[in-house]
Image 1 (cartoon, rainbow, N blue to C red):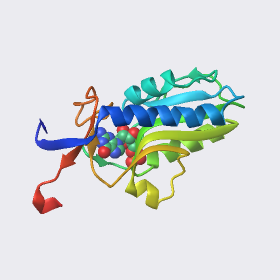
Image 2 (cartoon, rainbow, N blue to C red):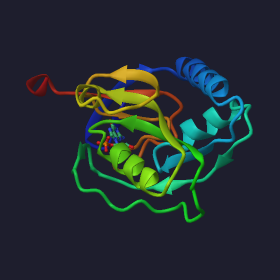
Image 3 (spheres, rainbow, N blue to C red):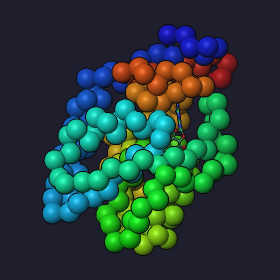
Length: 180
Ligand code: 5GP
């Protein structure tokens, strides 16, 4: 599949995503059985994952969206914009950050620090995808769907230059043989 100047091929089909999302929700339902967590999906990329995950959550919960970005094109810029969204107090609450993908881990680290600073009782994260770079840096993500190499992916909420978020499967970039 070609999208603008880049070539992509299917990496994770929607039926595998669906099963994985259900199993992540199961784990969270067990761990938060007697709690009322607040889910904080990080927009824009996590909208589809969050929507599917939350339909499988059976514990009483709240949902509030946040937005932050460190990405430009296909590479992390390392530049973080500030976290915007949750104006209500999170003091004493159990927070679960919902991320589409953890790459450098900068975004997640920044959000976790911010929330702990606001007196959240506990802060955990659920990410559908985690790249090798985040594993090497030991970024703490309690619930992870799929482990990836350091490849650029799109679909299921993730974009390339604003395109491809609506795709139900996840695709990875096919690198020209000279860049492999
Ligand atoms: P990090 O701060 O961990 O480097 O990057 C996290 C954010 O960058 C993710 O929430 C996502 O929006 C974006 N991102 C990281 N890797 C990819 C990727 O392979 N594809 C796309 N489309 N976005 C990515």
